[in-house]
Amino acid sequence: MIKSENLSAVKEVTIRDIWEAKKRITPLVHKTKLLHSNLLSQKHQSQVFLKLENLHDTGSFKIRGAANKILSLTEAEKQNGVTTFSTGNHGMAVAYVAKQLGIKATVCISNRVPEVKVQKLKELGAEVVIVGENQDDAEAHCYELEKDRGMTVIKPFDDPYIISGQGTIGLELFEDLPNVDTVIVPLSGGGLLSGVGFTLKTINPSIEVIGVSMERSPVMYESLKANRPVVLKEQPTLADSLLGGIGLNNQYTFNMVKKYMDDVVLLTEEEIAEGMFYMLKNHRMGIEGASATGIAALLSNKVVRKDKNIAIIISGCNVDMSLLLQIGLNHLEK
Ligand SMILES: *Cc1c(COP(=O)(O)O)cnc(C)c1O
Image (tube, rainbow, N blue to C red; front, side, top):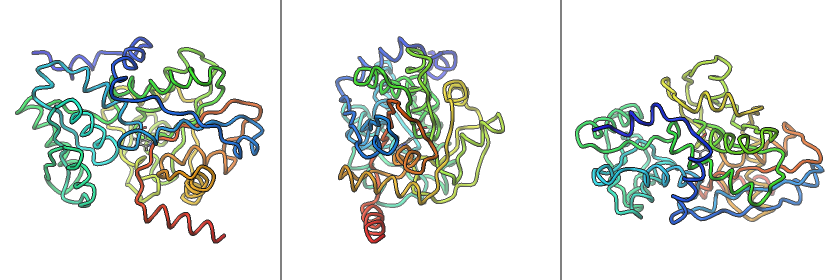
């Protein structure tokens, strides 16, 4: 039997894959709104739009890649179920999509993962297996499940189906804003930026793609500087969904980010908090730190573009309520 793993190792993402992904995920994933932001537009003398990926079921864009990957499995693979070692937005998306399709999902986590996250995953219908002390143990267990039980590991970013799923955001952007000039994309493992960057630049190479990350442990940024995947010690950050390595064996996203990203900007914790507060105050929406990095880049003037159509990807909303309210109150007092 040829495993999808072996096939995917030779597969290059094409624009046809993105269109196929759009068709495939349509029953599970709705199109998101592109919201005009008045204040940011005035400040930059540009037209600034927010692509509201925080409004999906499970609260992030990760549902796109997870749906595209799981829906493209063979019947036999679906029968055997899927597994992942992510406890964050990707893990939730995998659990949600699998449940919708009646497929068994097993999320492997370490004993360090907080109970609230475990509860959330169980609510979404996943089986949660607690193994070992850290993320590496959990990951190793996933691959054992693949070997022993034929389950498919759903990787968080370094997979052409995941990248293509995230790329559907690019198609939606063209539908609503055909003359987009600049797109600002939160960057971690690079599945989002690879998909969106590839799609936009394939259709119009002059579109500018800017990656945004936090100053604290930006692994893709440091990897691009070193011209190979590097490992960094993780520091606590408001943009926790952007933490994590890119894989020392990275097959796709490292090269795609290198090819499709024009510029990258790093944000401080205070700047990220300002971005979160901006959304809360002006749009009455609570978003997580990772997805506030794009707004932060404009608010801090680390990205300045005049007379342009700028789209910012607002990637997710999974943030602890008390943290969000605390940021809101702190900024109101200023
Ligand atoms: C995963 C995630 C990102 C980064 O996506 P990558 O494909 O890993 O670069 C950004 N924002 C949120 C909210 C996420 O969950």
